[in-house]
Image (cartoon, rainbow, N blue to C red; front, side, top):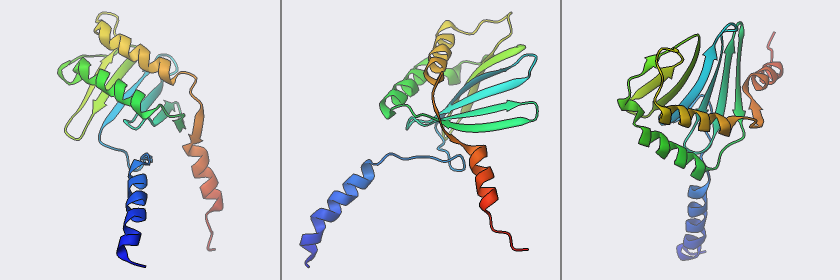
Amino acid sequence: MSLRTLFWPFMALLLFASCLPVKYGLDELPDQQLRFGSGGGIAGSFQEYLLLANGQIFLFELGFGKSDTFELQALSKSDARILYKEMDSLRLHKYDFNYPGNMSYFIRQADEMTEHTVQWGNPRWEVRPDVAEFFTQLNAIVDNRKVIFDVKKDKEELKDKEPTFW
């Protein structure tokens, strides 16, 4: 078989492979991240969501003696891009606002160069309305999203399947 005969099928395979979506694991996250969440109060529990540019969504729940991580049903890549553009338009990296309260809310923007968090909850200080609206929009998107992967449950199953050598 000649190289010419193999060239076009190889190029088609290469083009197809480059179009496949990238899926990240918690151990190898990209630098560009959009994190948001809330927590505090009497229970002292926190929920943090991580939305990646490819649409993947992770949920981290922290509380007294509890730490759970879930992957939620993904957003379309185009919808995720829209949210990232909206986040960029808020210019959060130029907005120094750190006034937590008993119940606190935050949006964290990170890329390869910087990481910046806007945090609010103190009733004496109001966050900008456009930031609060964006936070509400983000929460509406993750609300009632189906859990597709329970990291802790998966680790426990792997632990049970680990070979023992004694």
